[in-house]
Image (cartoon, rainbow, N blue to C red; front, side):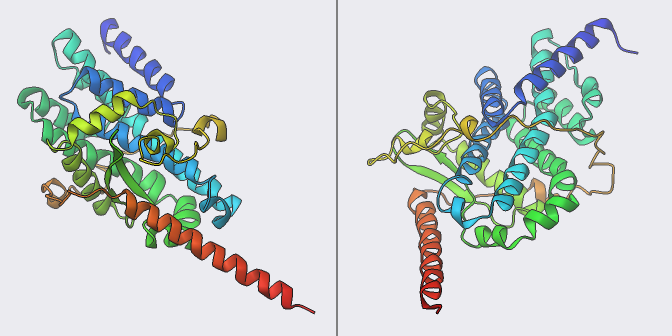
Length: 325
């Protein structure tokens, strides 16, 4: 039995989570607003920028070269994967962020309420530790570990996604060409980031998250990333940062013009921390990536390479048709 005071907090957080978990754009803005108001929660800024990337990837599915290269069914499955994973992470993480916000507001830790949102015991312990220690970097790593575990079974290992997406040859080709990249742009036209390789591997996703966090909050780069986020409205299109290139690209469709609102069904999820998954020591180890290079040219070189292969294949098919009697 909980008090009316606590029940009101739970109700408010549930309503706010549903309100902002409508689509990629609303999630991106919600994460960013949390960070703007609570700079100590670094993960919220990382989540907002990774969410932007998910929006760009969703829109890319309807643009060349992927529009032609991938079948309609494959594009639909990939979109469903992006959407489901990001919806699930938000439904788990955003109540945590709001409960922390309420704890600050009322001057007392309210993390004993986390079980009402089905948050893992792992994060219940980590939030309590953070409240006392204010170890910002540990909290970033903890949230990276938690959210990647949250999607492992419901998305990555879910039979439909496992068979139709992660074992599909189109996904493997994308992986080979490093088409899926997490990019952090600046208003100066430079783009930094890293490539997503073997997305289905839990440990590699956690490692990527730590690399991205190290890059994002490096003192040489953070001010530029934050400026970009503040002045660039999320629209789910790479035009968000391509507008700052020396030669701006043509405007691309916005995400909300391409996709409808998706309604998700949520099941009572099992706590990964107590349902057979072990917490690996290497997940906690810090990473020290090398990042001093604008990666945009590499990203676009891969895209142009894939487009060239697509054009060669189309030309070859055309010659076969012409040779038929």
